[in-house]
Length: 189
Ligand SMILES: Cc1cc2nc3c(=O)[nH]c(=O)nc-3n(C[C@H](O)[C@H](O)[C@H](O)COP(=O)(O)O)c2cc1C
Image (cartoon, rainbow, N blue to C red):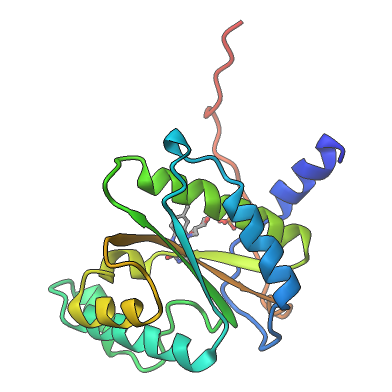
C-alpha cells in the first residue's frame, strides 16, 4: 500500500453522529476487530477485550442502563441526558464495540486508544462510518450498568475505556470540514 493511501484513509475518517439502519456485515466486523487485535499494547500484554454488539435490543438496554446511571448523577447536564427519552449515547449506530481492559496497568487506556484508532481506520477503509463513544467509560462501575455488561461477557476486573460506534452515515447530515490547530508540531533538526 502507498503511504498516500494510508494518509487519505487517516484524513477521511470523521466522527459520525447519525446512522442509517444498514448493518455492518460480519466479514467487515471481523476485519475491524482483527485490526484492533494488532494494535500495540504496553509490554505486549494484550489484556484488552472487544465486545461487539449487533443486537439492537441489547444496545437499547445498554443505553437505558447508562441513562439510569446519568439520571442519578449530581451533574445537571448528565441528569438531563438521563431523563431525555430521545437521548441515545451511540447515535443509533447498528453496531457498537465495547473496548475494555484490566485497570491494573496505568497504560490500559492507551492500549485501548490504539486499538480504537486501528478500528476507526479499518472501518474508514471499508467505507464504514464510526465514532468514539465515551459514556460507558464513566458509568461502567454503576451497579446496574456493571450487572448488564457482565451479562454481555465483559470481565468483572475490566474497566471500559471507550466504545466504537459503527455503521453507515446518514448522507443528509453535513459534516463540517476539519480545521486543524496551528503550532502543534515542532521539528528539531
Ligand atoms: C477520547 C475521545 C472521546 C470521545 N468521546 C466522544 C463521545 O462520547 N461522543 C462523541 O460524539 N464523540 C466523541 N469523541 C469524538 C470527538 O468529538 C471528535 O474526534 C472530535 O470532535 C474531532 O472530530 P473528528 O473525529 O471528526 O475528526 C471522542 C473522541 C476521543 C478521542
